[in-house]
Image 1 (cartoon, rainbow, N blue to C red):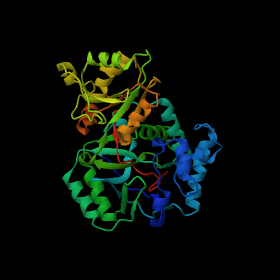
Image 2 (image 1 turned 90 degrees about the vertical axis):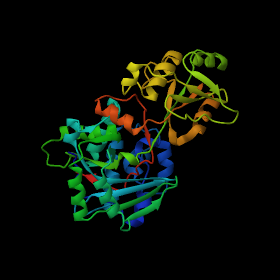
Image 3 (image 1 turned 30 degrees about the vertical axis):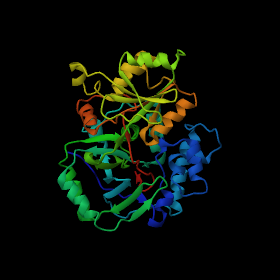
Image 4 (image 1 turned 120 degrees about the horizontal axis):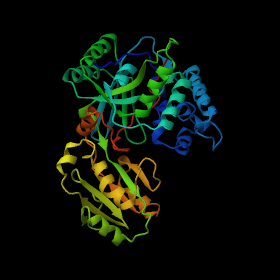
Length: 408
């Protein structure tokens, strides 16, 4: 059984939706947030990235940052940029990026189901990031950014969603990155029908937002008995067949000072190396193939067939595991990809150009373009109670923040 509970959202008026909406806190830097919010006091970045309203150089974890976030949320409400719906609803949030379209149900998921494992995770969280999100949520007394959940698609839910999107949306705008955003407030009957149908969904999966969901659970456990509604967390729930997963690529620095020919020779010992025609990037055509950018040229790497033991292991058989186990670890001495400073991760939305830029600038030696993790692989890892390696999935388009807030 999956709980998707209606709630009374704080949200902007239609005329302000595009002004308030902002990228999620963890995909932009403080400097980028300052630039995006400049001259826009209604930007939700004042809540999700409150350090932008403090002197440059302020530690992101300073007490003043969390207090400023709470003050800024209260100001958006006081100024009328956000107002609360008088009745609880479920909502629909649709995004269009090129030919891709996804429509999710906005509601509250149950902390108890997260703790019991019927909301399944696939990523190991970092204690420092959990601490940060826990403090942020607790100071706000609100969930300001949603967790991205998915489930194995259900035809009846699809039909209910289609029927509700026949009405005109409350919000309809396109952000500068070309992504279209549409939003519906569901009536009482549609809300109840969806809530009941989700009760027949056996489990939900965290696609993106592991630290936010873990922090919500910590806030709930810390604050039990205070009468506030923190037994749930804000979520947008999408069917699995609408998920768009892009590769999470790698760049690595060679610490041994080897020449490009020496690195190629070492790569050839573990994978088949095929040079690409000049000027062409190597797009991995299938799992277990990798594009490699070295010294201004692209190569296609083909890994050997999986041995039976690795093939049966849902984690070891992932492409990100193969590249770690065969390339990054033994060749470049990346023993801890979470902490090693000579490896970095590049979201697939940034394309080949970002890998080329980082290598050409001399900051890194080799760029690796991976084949995207598939949603069925995510399910297999989660269902087995296992965890993926760090930076295994990059979901697009990203959910905009500020369109709906769940206050305790």
